[in-house]
Length: 208
Image (cartoon, rainbow, N blue to C red; front, top):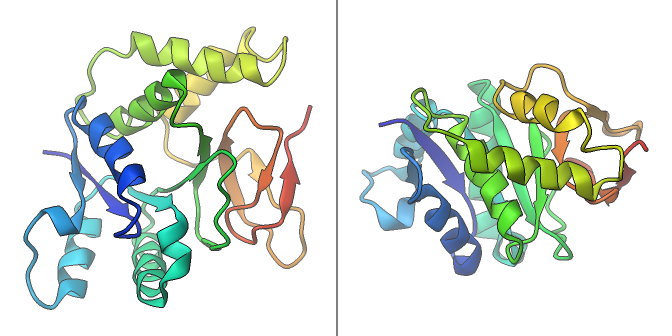
């Protein structure tokens, strides 16, 4: 079974539950280590699970920032993804920024867990990593909703292109952080016109 490695803070259970519910509706396995056995030393098991996964998801929540132990593990897991050239998706809740820079990031998703279309969008991101994905009609509607939220003209003609882009590997980033101390390239999946760069945590604006 294809899998995705989930990097997160152990105390951010509501955020983890959001994603476990999403994975339950797909054909992919979520590697969430506190819910499955792992061998000692844990770093070797984590390395092997990241190596065998289609991507790594970093779930930014308050627990990631509040505990140095968690910070070190999340940073190390992101570093393995970088070394293995794995897609690394950073997920952050709208209105709940976490001051934790992730220098290697291929895709950034700012979402509202109260919005069904946002969760459907994430489900299609998950399914895009499945070698044998199921039908995805609902996800196209969700993505059109994301495009519509960015402006009246954004949805017209852009929804299908953005949707297909979400199904491709991160090879043509649409954002380059303009700050001279950063310069990271990534794709932004968000209806919010202003947000914090996932790498340097400085404010960015999407082009009109």
